[in-house]
Length: 219
Image (cartoon, rainbow, N blue to C red; front, side, top):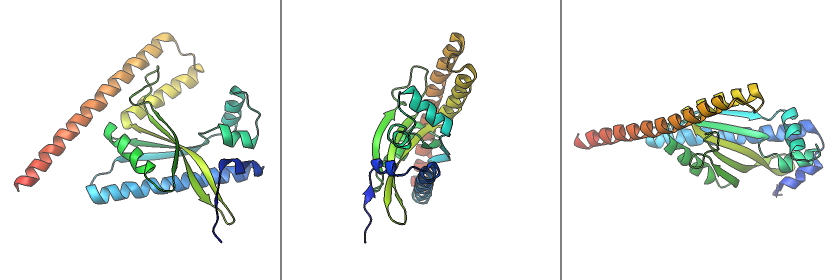
């Protein structure tokens, strides 16, 4: 007998915290495997790895509770699943900005992944200067008696953008989101420097590729 994928609302029937975390952890494994395979395929076909490294995490219980309270929701498992989109998160770092959209396109084309939302902070950075490409997707988790579509947030950014974002996170944590204005200004300036650096590195890489292709054609 075939099993039908269950929508997100079916999580409301699960009232055990450990079971919910198990399902989200399984979703991270599913997405992680897809990323590994896509990266291996790209290396096989193009002799190039677009992905530098991948990091996954499950949101801590206290962070989930805080997020629900900040938005005025009761701290129930149903609300957690419905309103908190980043319980399971994967961060992909790559060398060049062109890789960001290439990776996003490869993931979006997976037949069993459904893209729920996209936020392009690469072309439309936050006021702080933060740049990254965010996708919320659902992936089916096959259990022994059911299939549950589970949300995962995927962030894709360059190594330079990741370095900047890590520093911003540390500063926000240190000052609880109220950093001095001169530090905020310095961060914004650094974000612009990172953006220009990414652009120059991309153009340099493209120039190198053109030279290599030209030399191979002359052989």
